[in-house]
Image 1 (cartoon, rainbow, N blue to C red):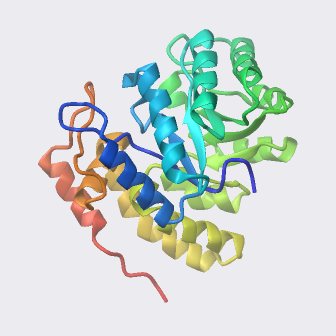
Image 2: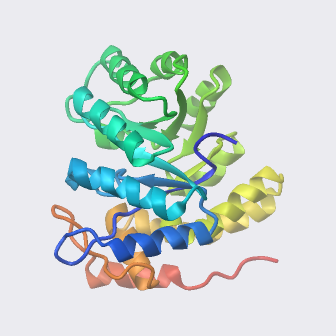
Image 3: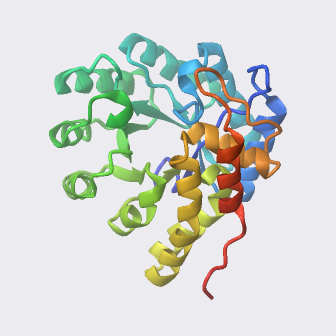
Length: 294
């Protein structure tokens, strides 16, 4: 067991139609995730629309989720920005708000060198006593965490995990074989192969709606029951396609949660836009109960 859990969900940030944060929606979502086997709540990450959150909102979300979950799941705060000073401040604010761990994305837009990335990550990790999960998502950041960088950062005592949204399984296995970093699959479509290759768990967007199926998938892999694991992953693929490939994960995850009655509104903040009816219809088809093999 890692300080982050195994069945993590990249939580959406429930909002009212006017764009303000929804406290009832947040409470209902946390209760749903705890009831469906989620043991790690990632707050204020990409799926939580972090670029649109103020510092006060980000800290307040961590505080509210920590209070609502009351120790029943780890609270991992997304605190990464493209500015080291801001990221350090957000890390300290997350610690004060009750976070159990930090999620640190590679600095985006500015495209720093690998040496700059190492300095940035070390500065944030030095700022609090909390364990840190690096977030490698070059499709969004414009720059990847290279293997030598990951190996060097693994030497920091508080940098303990990687959320891998790069999708290079060979590279992930290479880093796992050469470090003690716990890997988490950050691509719902690839959860099974990452788990089979030794990942410690998942950080799932689809898990907003179906953390229980992810829990069953993780358990099946741990038991060595790959036949059941393949069946479970197969039941999740239509959901992964509808949520992650129709338009954008945060948009579609909120649409799914609203369709299921877990949050009251699928509202997102601009520049994101709510799903059109054609996307919602695809989602409804994917949400139909699956028929699993016995």
